[in-house]
Length: 477
Image (cartoon, rainbow, N blue to C red; front, side, top):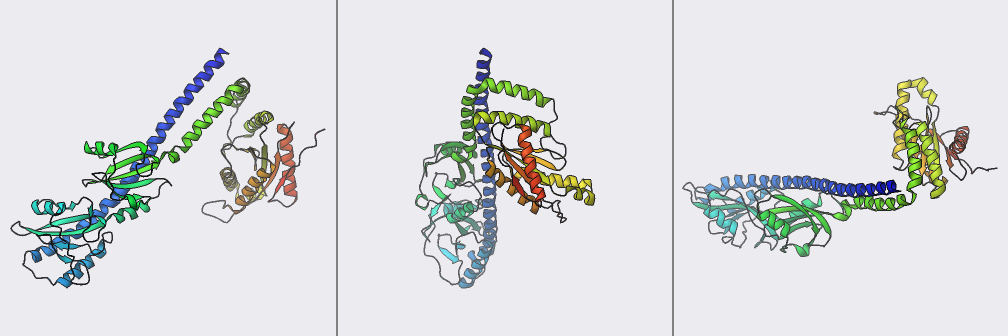
């Protein structure tokens, strides 16, 4: 009894440690996957920004002589030229490629006419930086509520400098936050995943799933704010979402040198579902084990000693061999009497397999055996046990399956084998299988249930092959 108590205590400790370890492994693997996804999104965003910067640079080069008064430029033609350039950057807001003079007035603007926007941007932070910093290069603005459209956007700009270093104005284009929204919609992710873009003040600019009423709102996100403020460029945390209150694992990544942060949140209910199911099964199994430990130990030790003496796997197909299957089936029959759980077996045989060997050779025959095994195993659950029973015969123990369910499984396998190519590339060879099914009943033994399945298989072959027959219940005397 002391030994049993110690064993149960050890098992409990192992379960707790295993659950703790698997929990952290699940968190780590999920976080790594999300970090990779963020890196892909960041790469796409930076590629788009780089492409826009090329157009801005070329435009600045082209219009610098114009703004310096050295080269005249017709307004309507210039606007149309800017519109043609926008074909290379479809991501930007419509007609947003424009030239702004040193006072902040738009003097050229992409379009078909000579019409110009009336808004003045001379007080904008990005404009003032370009004006006073000749080395500013590409400036990506903070999120702005556009004076031209009234929508949230991000401005990208480049300075135009005269021969003597004077500020001639800037060329700019705008990315609407809908661009990021559209990019997020293309990302393949979980049903409850969220993808968001924040600025440095934690203002929400884009999100999937869409929350239009939240855009532009500043959120209190201490985890991200503190870590980014300390110079950290990426990180993660588990917390309820401030947008929809769903608990998620959040991973964030600062966008290069720009004042924006990407964040992905994955609902814990999704990525921890398997772990929670495992924890539930551990608890349930532990209680059941505590009730039946003595019987289980006696039976498992006896069968473990037997199985260790046997080679357990068929070398050609990788399936359990016949001797191990016999032991497992005998064990399952004994347990069934206590658990009252239905069990069935299916005995398969490849039709006219000798013809395959005689016509195509034994190497091809071996390939056919492996192909048939692939079809059988992919139609089974983890709880089911397939076995190579003989040369071209296979047997399957179906846990928790009555006769009707077992027939459905067998019919599905039969149909799939009939359609399965027997080589890759397909050489046109097809085979069929016949099957006999028997459900394990009270007083059954390994020999009796296999004998019934074998008779059902014989009937399937006698009635034309490529079919499934079920064995009736035995009439015990």
